[in-house]
Amino acid sequence: MRALYFDGARIGLKEVDAPRPGPGEALVRVRAAGICGTDLEIVKGYMGFVGVPGHEFAGVIVEAPDRSWIGRRVTGEINLACGHCRFCGQGLPRHCPNRAVLGIVNKDGAFAQYLTLPVANLHAVPDDLDDETAVFVEPVAACYEILEQAGLAGKRVAVLGDGKQGILAARVLAAEGVKEIALAGRHPEKLARAKADGITTFMISDLLAAAADPFSKFDAVVEATGRTDGFAAALACVRPRGVIIQKSTVAGPVPVDLSRVVVDEVTVIGSRCGPFPPAIRALAAGKVKVKDLISGRYPLARGEQAFAAASEPGAMKVVVSM
Image (tube, rainbow, N blue to C red):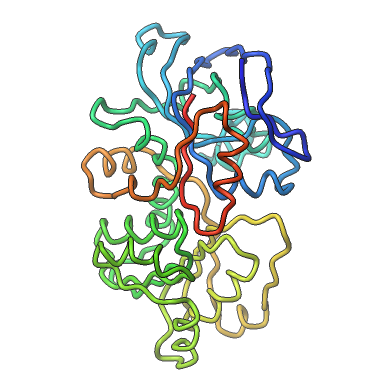
């Protein structure tokens, strides 16, 4: 089959063997996959991954242990836990030390004609949810994780980063009733997308200047800049005993002012994958917009150009169709 393969130095189109499903797994014909910030970090060396990246996808099941699944459109959760270690037994399969992660750790991913996943990881895509929208289920689910991890009702919340994850986070929080949200970024044209939804927006330099007043700081800050200086900006904006929800994953080292964390008694929450069912419901109901975040569409045959386009300044979601 054709796939985008990262060899540790560059990503390019390659003929590779089609995967074969193991016990309890389904074979999925991929229809569309999205390039996210983690994929861009992988091709910079993040996680030391070699293989087929990609973890945001929509596809159709062509083989499954239960034949009733065959022909169903699906998307899937990306963590493949061992199922028998202490973490799995405690209900923490996303943190199983033996896990593989689709397109990120020891598991070829979605920038290919086919992938395999355990049936337990798969979620049916409603008929009225098109493939391009379904590609956003995984990143929208990651935003719902913020709500599961941090009680934000009645809180003043800043979201740092006007890229895909930042705008999605602000939209999910607004859709789920968080009243005071400020989205800060560096690109007026990107911030305009959220401003059109009624979300208050700032240039991040202006937000940081305002945060010099201790009474202007936020109860919670979602760090989604994708930059190595993002955490420092979040720490500057959060009040004492506030919460930072850390979303960015970057390949480079991130400086941390631990003294500030300690003196201000700041809680830092790492936030990664999230629940798929509320994300699917929100997208199907139109509660969270996503289509305006697509800045490019490419066939798999032009996958290298797709990655180049996704890496361009100002790029948003680039979708690769198979």
